Length: 148
Image (cartoon, rainbow, N blue to C red; front, side, top):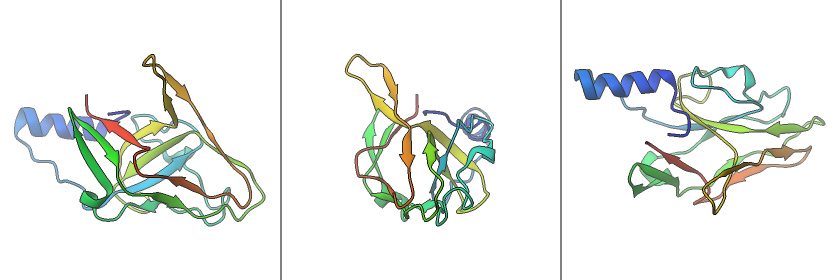
């Protein structure tokens, strides 16, 4: 996956190799970051309400309604993920997104840098600049995560 956290890599490995079951998350929440949270799930870079008044993690709803399984470990969003407008004066540059088990705190499952895949297979980072009054949406079919 783009950047499966250490916790989840070890949990999946234990489940597959040792038969120790890892509890599946009941929900997913999308979080936004101003820098790479890394596989260690460093939350210090998560956008805050002080930076972006009105910011809260996006509840993706029922997991089966939020994600499509495309095969070969590839999953793509089939739901729209929406973040309320920035009600403050500060500009926020969003560079990464993460999937969490909880709406606040909680364990991060994976993270991904914002950007686009190029025809030659390379990746082009594309941070999002969120100014006062701007919202942020990820439309269906725009977020891919792949287990590899």
